[in-house]
Length: 354
Image (cartoon, rainbow, N blue to C red; front, top):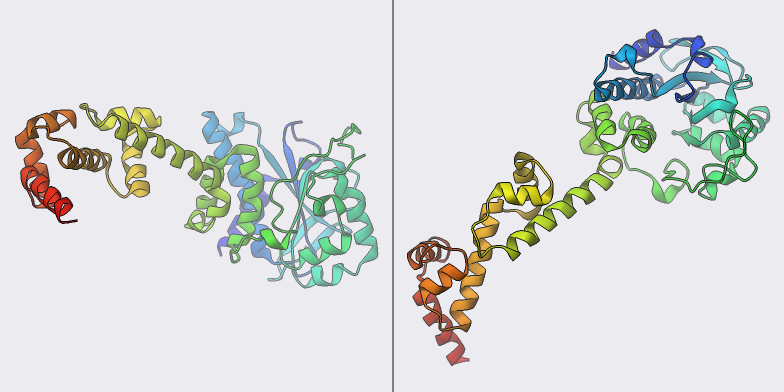
């Protein structure tokens, strides 16, 4: 079972000592569970952060043991101790009432039958209200949304990560910070994905915030093959916009420089991309290869000059970056099935008739 293997890998790599023996830069991720919680959600959440640690170490170019992990995952429940999952596997948890709750970066509230009942637990709700201002981001899945709604965490609903007067783990004031997309709270911002992708999506919003799109994409594919294709709303926003701007810039440059001999390598340099990546991205966005796009630009300009001027075919060819009139004639016959001379005559005949 993929989920059981994922949670086993995570449990092997963490222990209760992670509560106190982590570096000051390590972000602590809490996963709050209730009786009969969905094991799949917890496995994927925990494994996503383990994979993020591995990807971060790989990108650092050092041995994993020499790179401080980015995240430390801690399982939580209201009272602590052993909590049974939906498939009868028990998981050890720390108490939500423990003294270390001030130091968490993110808290995930997962669903399940126990979560449905927990929203009526006044003691739990009071505790969540007390600790939420000290946690940077609170996210919920499925029935966990009901728990979050019952707690009525006002700063989340206002679109802030922390409320005025909140303090960090050291007791220092935390300035209110505009929230990132809180899709788990605001119904209008929900990401339309199905489990188990939903759980990965929740983790990826945090991982992308901390490490950017490349590592988030690596994590999504390692956690669940094909997941990144279903998570464009999270993974591709910034990346796609940046690549689109680069391709648009290169296309504009080709249009401006069609009169001279230019190469794909030069266009790729304008886009600040490798030649191979540029070719692939350009074709995907424009629908033509860079060479075809250049040829189209030259053909368009030639047609305009044939129609609007009395320049010779050779002169038009040279003006449009084609070596000779014969070369231009070959392009016209191949692309338009007509010679430049006949194109000019046909255009003028059409104008005369109108």
